[in-house]
Image 1 (tube, rainbow, N blue to C red):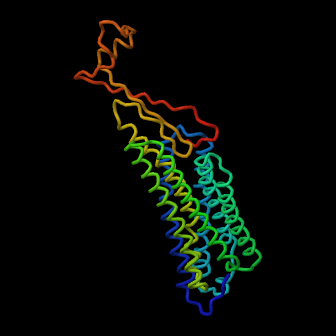
Image 2 (image 1 turned 180 degrees about the vertical axis):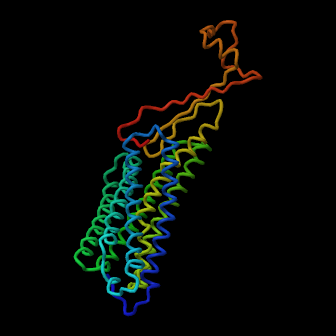
Image 3 (image 1 turned 60 degrees about the vertical axis):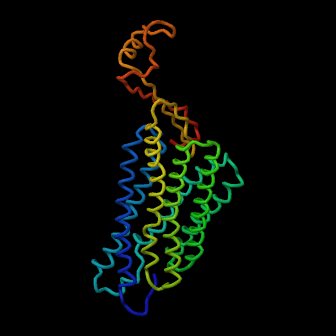
Length: 328
């Protein structure tokens, strides 16, 4: 751990304390997103549900460890100056847990790019290399911390690789979403949904990218403070939030599709996700006769496809078979 020339705790452990408070705030946002996900998408495959639970558990464990670290330094060892310069296991484990959360989240977005690009290896491989490079640098930094080399070694390459990978993922996802929308000419609904997808992607990716760039900037500007560590406390959590926001965005798209009546809404494909919601309008008497088998196509009975004064809306939700490689 760094040994500053004086014992002013404000830019060091004071900054880390503020970083823990922000981590608690982001954990609350993540918890709300996880609750919304399990409430609105109970039909999702089990592997996706387990993936979401794993992200939340990892971030919760990470929060407990960094909170205990601050408690150890500022409460248990209040006035014990030598203890301030010792790296405890709960703080060093921060890097490992952030690395796992970052890897899982970036692999999720890599899978989306793989589907969007129709399994184009020339697109997926550079992203995969960026993801693995970022994870490798995190683990290498963690190993050096365990050896007592401190947090400085390898910090700049780590932040640069992380920011570059985030930017590459965001650009590719937005590009392929826009490209797919070109196939639906003149469909206002599709253009609106595509715009929403792009805004969600840019917003969530920008949060992670700006946070990593903030870590790099504060490290270069003030390397003998813990401000960059405080910012890095929330980096893995923002990746998880980006994943959950992407999954929960499907609810808004389904609501937009369901609002269209009297039409068969074309399937919307979103990162391997397909859904279709046709709606038929039947009058009450025709609906009863249809249920009794009394309606024929050419008979004297009223047609179920007419639109009388009293209407009943019958939503028929159909979901095409899921691909083995499809997300929910």
